[in-house]
Structure formats: structure tokens, C-alpha cells
Length: 549
Ligand SMILES: Cc1cc2nc3c(=O)[nH]c(=O)nc-3n(C[C@H](O)[C@H](O)[C@H](O)COP(=O)(O)OP(=O)(O)OC[C@H]3O[C@@H](n4cnc5c(N)ncnc54)[C@H](O)[C@@H]3O)c2cc1C
Image (spheres, rainbow, N blue to C red):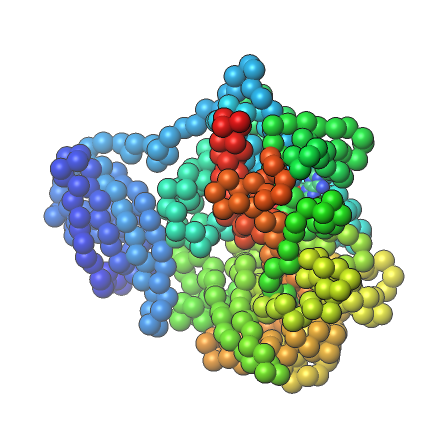
């Protein structure tokens, strides 16, 4: 079989900087780009003019382009002639605190809190990290309890515990941020703590839910060995405020924790913290977010659509991204796919009994039979307007809570007692035709599915735009609405329904000095990478505040 490398351009030579090193940018068919032996031959023949010298090479960038009906890989390659590959990490960070370091309080050990802790150590400040949940290992048992016994521990679940919502997440490391230096820095810290070097290369890096606990554990060890502290089972229930200045926090066991500043990084599901902020009359505001469903298909269907071939061969399981605008009952709303998990699983992401929330994740190999993605609808101020008189700035949060609880209650009427985390589901074609599914497709959702009329039990502002959007998605991905795909409710924790305001430069709350609202829960991040970057920024702002005071 002859395989043609049909495009080949920009053999850029770095001769001036390092005679033995060259870089090339190539666009190749997958059969060459993904086969190290064929790729080496290609480099030798086409880029190195048939050289007989020994050389080693590695990819520094790789992206897959499946547009225009054919698949091309765009890759950057470094070649070292007669030399071994140098380390890929530009810098190995060491973490060590001076003996007399002042201490700062961090609430929440998600990506924002953990990256803030590491950055504070670099800046000479001792992080005291308070986390309501358990360490990654103990947390695993509570996840099994949700999946098998349908029991949700409000302090230890898919969102709460060491590493936050990021630990048993998918570990996709995409961000819309354009700050390349900051992105590279976060990725390198992940690699230093055990993530694969591939994340420095892939255009869409991914760690995988099976690898994340090890990475999080290694980050914890860096914090502890440097002299920082992490306290699990430490649920913050109160703030220590003096004259509009944050002095520290109080945990449920009655302990007071004092510090030179407080970074509040409690994530989008810490509703009690939002209520506490409001109750203390600390300014907080409602913000738009999105709600909808998870949609699950066989992975083979997605591969076929995206790669235009029956067998994906060496290519990784394919992803998709869909977006459209709808106008339901005169209101324009975006409907978009969110957090797509190729070769993944749908998981129960509720944080308290009596609510129904699903999310998605995948292992590093992405080798599940299924593909799933959130498909969500923009939630607008007019949707939460009825809650404003009673709930004020927490009106959007109240709406989110109500939809989750309503869906859970309606599902309870269909399931046996003790099956509280079974999720309502409907085949996509039945949803668009407004009829209940007589049977459901196989699923990755471990607590199980129950056929339910989602077109009726979802609020109209979600069901209406969804039923308009799905036929549009069908035009973009033929077969999307076919019988193999089904909707599973409810995907409601896409981002925070509140924002805790902060000064754009100092990152301090406008009313409360030394309070640094941080990460996804405060409304400044949407995903692992942006939460990690925001954690670092808050650590730097806190250190600057301390140096200037
Ligand atoms: C199943 C799943 C899959 C996901 N997949 C991806 C993905 O592939 N890629 C991606 O970018 N994002 C993904 N996400 C989202 C991502 O995990 C979050 O955006 C990210 O973790 C937010 O980071 P954070 O540090 O701001 O908050 P969180 O990760 O939510 O961490 C907040 C922490 O604060 C703790 N806390 C809350 N209240 C208190 C309190 N009162 N006292 C003490 N501690 C408290 C919580 O226990 C938690 O550990 C996924 C989320 C889930 C649930």
C-alpha cells in the first residue's frame, strides 16, 4: 500500500540557533503522522534530504483537522541530529518556604486553590488550605456509594474533595485564554506532578480521570513538603470580619483560622458559601449560566461523522463541538455542546441528596464504547426574574436549585425507592417528536436510566430551545438525532450562577479588604485551566497586597 503525504510545507531550519537541531511544520495523513517509524522515514527523506546521520525527534505540537471531508494532522517536529532529546520541561520548579513565612488562608482545594497554594509558596507565603471534603483516596469510596448505593455525601462527591471538581473530571485542559505563557506554565506544573508530556504537545490536551488523582496527590505532596498545610474535612462555615477586613475563617469544628488574606475558591457548587456571603451583606451578584442535558451516542458514530471513515485506525476517539442560536417564543438563546467526552462516561455529579445533576468524564485512553457531551441552553435574567423579590442576587442560584430538585422529584415518581440517582432519559428522536421512549439505548451512566418525557418535565426555556437546536445539529452531524442517541438529565452545573465581584487589578473584593474571590465559583473561571490560572493570579494579588501594606 502506498500512502501519500499529500501536503508538506514550511521545513523551517533553526540552523542559526543550534546547528544540530531543526524544526519542521508538516501537514500529513494520519497513517504517517501517527506512526513513529513512518514519520521518521518521512522526516529523513523529505525534510533532511535523505541524510544518513542518526537523529532523534519529537512532536512539539499536534492538531487534527477533520474538515473538508478528509483528516489531516498538523504537526510541529523537533529533530536532533547525532544528539539525544533534551528535557521537554523548560523549568523544574522547587517549592520551599522560608522559616518565618506569613500564612494565608485558602478555602477550597480545587484547581484554583491548589495552584494558588503552589504559587503562594513560590512567593514566600505559607498556604493553609481548608477543604470540606476528603483526600482523593478516601473520596473514591464516596463516589462508589453514589454510583452503586445512590447515596450522596454533601461533603464528598464528584465536586467536593481534594482536587475539587477537577479530580474525577475528564481532565480536558482546554481554555479560551490566549495567554500562551500562562497556559504553558500550568501545563508544565501538571507534567512536573505526573501528567503525561503529551499535554504539552496536543492542541486539545487531556489527562483522564484515572490519572488525575495521582497528579493531585503529587501536588499535595509538593505543598506539604514545602511547609504548606492542607486540612481535609474542614468545612468553612463562617468568616472572621473586622471593619470590612477579612481576618480569617471558621470551620465547622469551631476552629478559627487567621491569615494575611483569604482566597475563596469554593467552586460553583458551594451553595452554602454563596448564602453565607449574602447573609454577611458582602456584595454578590447573579450571572448568566447554562442548563440542559447530557447527550450520549456510541463513540463509533462520532468517529464516523468526524473522520469520514468506518474505522478510525490510529486516530484518537473523535470529539465534536456544536453551537446554534434559537428563537423560542420570541427569545433568542444560544444552545451549545459543552465538555464533550469522547470514549467517556456520564456520572452523577449531585452535591446533596434530593437533586439530580449529571456530568461527563473519560479515562486517559478514552476507550469507553460511548461518547457524551453536555448540550445546554443559555439561562437569561428573565428566567430567574421571578426569584428576585425573595432571593435578590441569589435568584439565578435559586432557579438552578429549583430545576434540579423538580427534576429529581419528578424522576422519583418513576423509580423504585433507593434508586435516587437514576436519571431521566429520552431518545433524541422521541424528544423532538414529543413522545416518551418505549425503550432506551445502552448507557455508561452507572446508577441507571429511566424513560421519562423530558420534553414535558424540563422547563420550557430549556426544552423549547433544545428541540429547535437538535434538528440543526442533525444537519451538521448526520444521524445525531437518530435512535442511537439519547438525552439524559440534568446538566446544570456548567458554570457559576453568581459572581462575587472583585477589583480588576487588585482582585480584592470591593467592600472587603483581603478577601480574594477566586476560580469558577466566584465567576472568574470555567474549567480546570482557567481556574488554575485564576488561582495563580489571586496568589500574586494577595502577595502584592501584603508587600504593599
Ligand atoms: C465530572 C466533571 C467533569 C469535568 N470535566 C472537566 C474537563 O474535562 N475539563 C475542564 O476544564 N473542566 C472540567 N470540569 C470542570 C472543572 O472541574 C471545574 O471547572 C474546576 O474544577 C473548577 O475549579 P475551582 O478550583 O474553581 O473549583 P472546584 O474544583 O469546584 O473546587 C472547589 C473546592 O472547594 C471545596 N469547598 C466548597 N465549599 C467549601 C467550604 N465551605 N469549605 C471548605 N471547602 C469548600 C470543594 O469541596 C472543592 O474541593 C468537570 C467537572 C466535573 C464535575
